[in-house]
Image 1: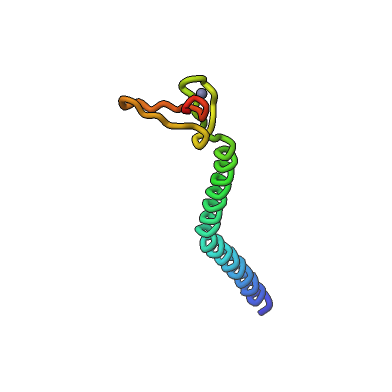
Image 2: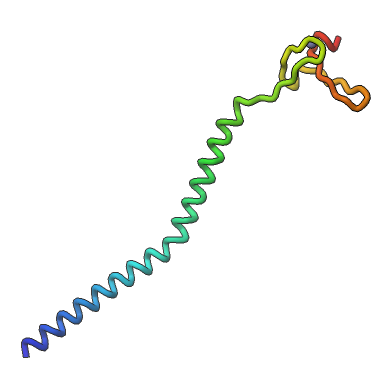
Length: 94
Ligand SMILES: [Zn+2]
């Protein structure tokens, strides 16, 4: 019976297609969490890198309470009086 064989062959072909699609879906769902995880790590890494680039040039400076000269923390002298804190440059602090 050639027609029956033919039908059986088509049936097997359809079953194979369905199985292939099914396994592809299984593979996609198996890798999806890892892809999402990798994406989160990548985004976090890029965010950290861009944050460092922005933060690096911004060094906090203090202006001298006497002459107004600006300097970095290590160049200034901190003077506390009556609870208030003033920053003086090395020249004014002497
Ligand atoms: Zn000064």
